[in-house]
Length: 118
Image 1 (cartoon, rainbow, N blue to C red):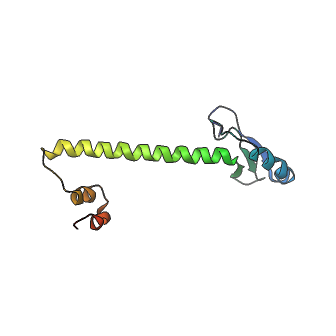
Image 2: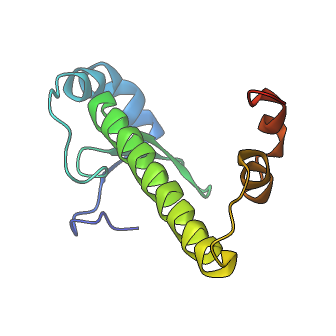
Image 3: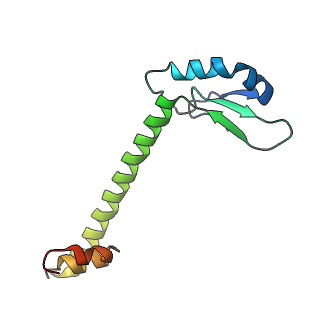
């Protein structure tokens, strides 16, 4: 699979990767700024005659990717909540909904007992 930027990640066989490991780790750990493309600085380690591979990814790139995934998950949750509220408002005919009923409707009924006055 090609990297998003169109450049294929560097690929090494297991023997070459084993011999080069100290230098590969030194290069990967020396990176201070994340790459905009997670695969830009990846070194793939492939086995002879078997499917699959392993990847050596600089930690700075891995951390940046994880942070971006967390951001996207939060944005997705917010969008889902906004859509739910939009639908709920359209159906509510102006009626009020208790916090407990709201939590139950969004699948968080386990938190109803923690509400004040419950």
